Image (cartoon, rainbow, N blue to C red; front, top):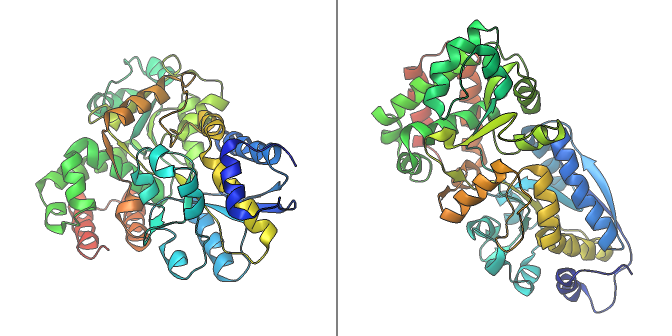
Length: 410
């Protein structure tokens, strides 16, 4: 038996009194871009090195919107994988209610997850009726604007310090033959950008009023009218961005063909793979440089219920490993995300990650839409944003339809 870390020992106690035989452990996820693949390889390597089990990679090409229906269909259809990535929040509610996901409470309590996971809301998002059903691996925030130094050099403009300066510089980028704003043509990306604009333009309290309190009247009011006008401006800036996937949009920024991109901190992994240095080659602006806050979304691993005791034991060992200090450091440094533990050494993190860590330490955080809104509501918003960004729909019409969705949100 390979040597287990101290945290793995706690999981082993939960599994059985004697060592479990080796098992092939299929893990599904949608981490297929350069930066994502580098990060998931760290997790797979740790699992293969520190347990007797073997990681069987089940990468699904495309975004979470492509992968989640496949993952859920397999679980519902009786062909479950051993472990799967999902976003922590409400995506797995129905699977938990149907008794199809493994209860991890024993591992979480044995290892004191409630004391080490920061913010504890991440663990709360994994908890249903007092029981823990997922192991969070990172904190991802959508609240970032990524800027290409090369693009602004070509345009003869200084690198913006906030969204307002970016808007002012957009005409110069266009005159230089560059795309001001890189945007992939998918509803989840466009909805992410809109959510980021909400906080930058309307502020944290307004975002909470709409997304947490589901106040449709506020969503239809003047504060959100400003957000929709800003979204209409952003739509014009992105007109020449003819790419589909988010990492292709990021590549437009990396190669200096676009001025900026509103995208989550996972974009940072792409800059790293490309050999770019934060502060020299690109700038990152949390909260678009206007309201420096982070939403605390991210990824977790869930473990479908299986009959095989060997797989069951391996599931608990993987859950423990995900939260371990060594995996938290190695994985998140490659992914560009923040760790879910505040007691580990992240001194080697780059400038952008350090900014994120400082914001997290100050407590300037919000729940993500995946936590505040149901998957059905999220899908409706993504569909609306896909239509808005790909058409000439007026800001007023989009706001009216948005408020209607919020009025029936659950």
